[in-house]
Amino acid sequence: MYRPQLNALALVALAAVALIGACRQPLDRPIGRGDAAQARPSLAALDSGASLLADVDNARTAIAGGDAMAAANDLIQASSLAVSLPDAAPDPHTRPPKPTALSAFEAEVMLTTARSRLERGELAGADAELAAVQQRVSPRLPSVDLPLLRADQSLGLARVAVQGQHPAELKTQLLTAETSLDTYRGQPHAADATALAAAIDRTLKRPGALGRLQPDRLDAWSGRVDGWG
Image (cartoon, rainbow, N blue to C red):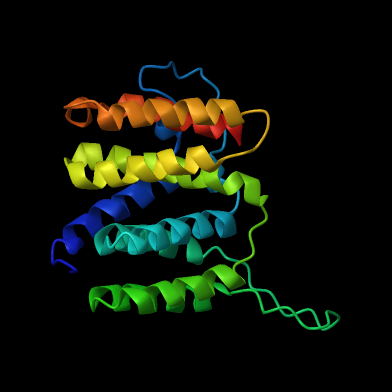
């Protein structure tokens, strides 16, 4: 069932958007590094379409697991990216014509509709709306990199969950990051991704480890993922 507490976590997720989008540099490197360290763009900043798809994919995964609250948090972040989508006209030379790429306005409407259905407990309807979004958003990043985007964004949301003391959300985001890293097959960092997934798995299984997890550890994990993209 959908809970009223969603509004509080929605505000936390909006803070995540601000942290990841506007103040990404602190998340890209562990706390304690000098200011002279070179900043590099995060994977999430490379392409709004790919980032939005990663959030939508996370939301559908949460819906499949019956976690409407986590799904709504992912959709809040996806909505923040929708405004950056390019408008595109259909190509009249393709036969049959390809579906028109989703415009920023259409994406926002569809994501809002999905969130409204989540609020009413209509998980299947919300999932169908998100499937339609996936079919029409055009990412420029290769699909092989999408698991890294999912993992990177989930680690960012895990950091916010630690700071906001939301252990259930922390566990959900770490599980998403672990699963995404396990599916990554890009080269030459597939083995590194698998090793990081195993480290996250050990943290999840170690009694009391989530309660002791510090933001700088999540920063370090996120920085490693960014470096592989």
